[in-house]
Amino acid sequence: MRKMTESHLGNREFAMEAYIKGEGIAGSVATLLHDAVMNPAEVVKQRMQMFNSPYKSVLACVRTVQKTEGFGAFYRSYTTQLTMNVPFQAIHFITYEFMQEQINPRREYNPQSHIVSGALAGAVAAAATTPLDVCKTLLNTQENMALSSVNISGHLSGMVNAFKTVYQLGGISGYFRGVQARVIYQMPSTAIAWSVYEFFKYFLTKHKLEKRTSF
Image 1 (cartoon, rainbow, N blue to C red):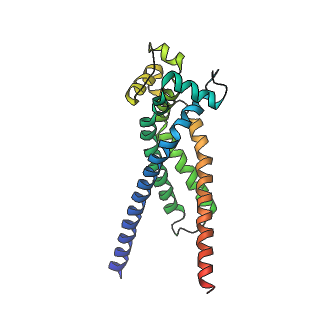
Image 2 (cartoon, helix red, strand yellow):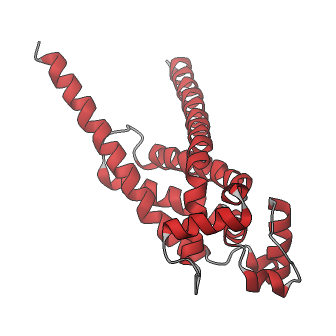
């Protein structure tokens, strides 16, 4: 009996480990495709959010960037975006699954557990990837005052150059500027996303089972 219990626990741990790895890979692949489509939109959004932004509309921003910097400007931060979002999503998915295993091991539909797990997963992933987000923002905005203060003329490109520039501008602490705002933004976002996902998974599974039993 004891051997059977140990075997069962071992199989469960193996299955859980494989499941978590699968979640991490799934999140990473989804991010790869998502960022290829959304990176230009992120560039436009951040440039329009800059203080005293010279752009009056989305279309004007797209035209100006295309004319003055070329099409490549929309993907200048793509490598950094991927370097940030792949670990972000992997940490996000793995942390969520870990939290669910701790507070909802039977994997029942439990809105409270999904909200807590989702919020904590978003917070951990956001905090861990803040340095990359800071570098991505600098690449996207090409903020003139910041670049000129460290004697950089022209356009900043490349993740390595962005890391060096951020360090020149603010030292180690510069990599974590905005970490609190980023965590506060991500926590409700991921909590809502996981809650909605789990609700529809529960609803559709229940509906499917009811449909089967009705025949």
